[in-house]
Amino acid sequence: MPTTTFVLARNGSGYRGDGRAAGFDTVAAARAALAAGTVDVVTGALGFDPAGPAALTAPHRWSSGSAVTSQVPERRRAVAESLTGAGEHRTRVCAALDAIAAGTVEKVVLARHAQWRLDRPADPADLLSAFAHVGPGAAVFAAALDPAPGRAGHWLIGASPELLVRRAGRVVTCHPYAGSAARSRDGAADTAAARGLLASAKDRAEHAFVVDDLRTRLAPLCTELSVPGEPALMSTGELWHLATPIRGVLADDTVTALDLAALLSPTPAVCGTPRPTAARLIADLEEPRDFYAGTVGWCDARGDGEWLVSIRCLELAADHRDVRAWAGGGIVAGSDPDAEVAETAAKFRTVRRALGLDAPA
Ligand SMILES: C=C(O[C@H]1C=CC=C(C(=O)O)[C@@H]1O)C(=O)O
Image (cartoon, rainbow, N blue to C red; front, top):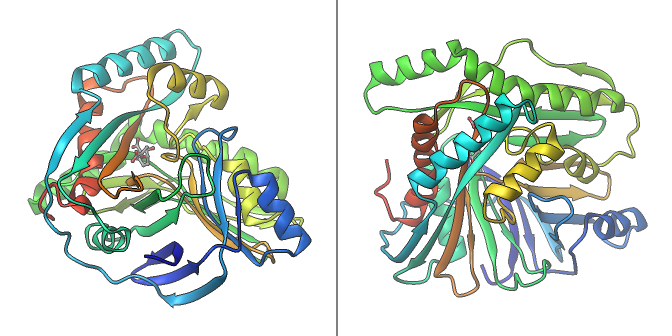
């Protein structure tokens, strides 16, 4: 993708930004440019840490329509790999469970970090097409990270099932995901996994933290807010999830999609409750998350836009051979450390398949 700087698409169609008229490494700078009318649209990524750098681009050209074709991933090998080990993740989950038992935090989302050196370069456009192949039901995205310091030539590419927020006029939509069960190729076992997830009190509690947080943050901004009382089942190629569609009507139409993304991210689907305590625990236990578990999307000068939670994604370095990825899961009272290790392995599969390290499902 020599000139493309941003793509976000569902089922092949969506939005594309080409070129870079301006770059911003803070939300405030991008917001000011949109408000001043010096740019028509801002695209890109916000990191997990709201105080960290953003990677936002005002493209020269912004278009909608056919944006991605799905393509079977090319098989590749990793010539080097490092991964947060199962034992290390289990230890971290136990530390989180201790913090929950002590009452310092109610929920915290812990992630494992993976790093691969590929045997040959992966073209960002091909990787995006590969994610479209392995990520049915998800929105695929590719965002050039150049505006962030030290990220020249880097890309964030993935297939996220989770809509952080969409704003269309005064209507605001969120579709939070939290609570997971690995899928099975055996039909009966797959149905049983879905039913088990829907009936799981632990997963419903894990999900409710996210819905409650969104409700609390959106309610003061909305004249109407509809939040279903029960989550529904949604699936990706690898996992079943609990999900809740939320719809609100903004009281003030000067609140933009970018404002909403910055307000809501990171939700308890990727951070925890209370947010500051969970974020501190994550910083103590994990490697820096950078652009994983932040948000990726766009906002136009009218304030409309769409932002995804940046999960099931990877960061591709400028040489197109070094890749980093993360996979996390929510820890609440009653979480089982071994099940959490297995869940992160299932979540890594989307990225591994898109990279061609594992065969497509
Ligand atoms: C944090 C991730 O997933 C989130 C989204 C859906 C289900 C999740 C869970 O069940 O823990 C996580 O909250 C990830 O994929 O890295």
